[in-house]
Length: 473
Image (cartoon, rainbow, N blue to C red; front, side, top):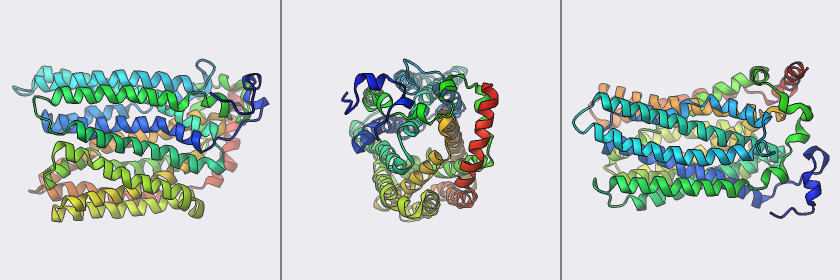
C-alpha cells in the first residue's frame, strides 16, 4: 500500500511521535466496504432466513425469532471486545486483527447455522418433538456464536473509525461508511431476489445453501480489503490517549467504571435503546406483512429491502452533507425520529388499499427517515465517546443497540401474536406493531432533548481521567 510522503521508518515509529495524515474520500469509501459486507449478511438473517423458518418450514414464529435474536442477545460481549481491542493488540494492531478474525469466524458460524435449520425443519415433519426442541436449542446456540463473532469484528471496526477521524470530518465519514452498509443491503436484496426467483420446495435447500456460501465468503474479502493498512497509516490512537504508554494496562474493572462516570452516558444509553426498539419492531414482521396483506411471494417480500435501502442511502447522504452541518447532530437525530414516526403511519395506511406500489413507496420513505436518524444518532454517539477508551465506549453503545434490536425482534413477534388474538384480520394485527413504533419514536425525541454533549466533555473527561489514573496507579 502506498504511504504518501511517509517513509517505512517513519511509519514504524509510535503514532504519537509522527504526523498522521488525514483520511480522504477514497479511504472513507474503502472503509465502507466493511459495512457493505455486514449489509449482505443482515439480509440473510432477517430478510431471508426468517421467512424460510416461519413460512416455508412452518417453525413457530416465537421460536424462529427467538433463535435468530440470540446473535443480538450476546451483545454484552461487545464491551469485552471493545476493552480487549483497547488494551490487547493483535499482531501489533489494536483493531485490525480483531476485525479479520471475527469476519472469518462469523462466515463459518453462519453457514453451520443454516445446516441446523434444515435439521430442525426435518424434525418437525410429523409434528414438534423432543428432537425438534434439541435442534431449536442448537440453532439458538449457533446464532449466539455468530453474534460473538460479529461483536469481535464490528466493535473494533467502529473504534477504528474514531481512531482515524477528526471531529470536523466525522459526520462525513459516518455518512459514507453507513451508506455503504445500505449499499450492501440493496445489492444483497437484488441478488437474493434473483437467486430465489422461481424457487420451489425441492430447490429451497440448495438455493439457500448457495446464498449462505457465496455471501459470507464475499464479506470476508470485503472486510480485508476495507481495513488493510488503514490502522498503521491513519490511526490517532496513541497520540489521543493521555496515558498512551500505559494504555495496555487498563483493567476491565476500570473500563466498567468509565462507563458510569457520567450521567450523560446513561441518558444517551436510554435514548439509544428506546430509539432502536422503536425502529426495529417491524424487523421480523415486515416481510410477513407484505405476504399476508399484499400477497407478495418470498422473493418479492425479501426484495422490499432494496426500496428501504434506496431511501436510507438518500437519507444518509442528505443528512451527512446537508442537514447535520446546518442543524447539528442532535437536532438532526430529533428530526429523524419525528419523520420515522410519520412513516410508520404511512405503512399502516398503505395496507388499507393493499397496493404494492404504495407499500414500496412507504418503505422507501421509511428508509429516508431512517437514514437521517441514523446519521445524526451515530455522529452524536461518536461525540460521546472518550478517545482514551474508544473501544470500551463503542462496545457500550453497540451493547445498547444490539440488546435493543434483540428485544425489538422478540417484541415485534409478540405484539403481532397479541394483535392476532385481539383482531380477526391481518391488517389491524400488523398495524399494532407499527403504531407502537410511532409512539416509541416520540418518546425518543423527548429523551434526546436531555442529552448534553458539552456536559459530557467538561465533566466526564475529568471523571474518566481520575478513574484511569487511580486504576493505573
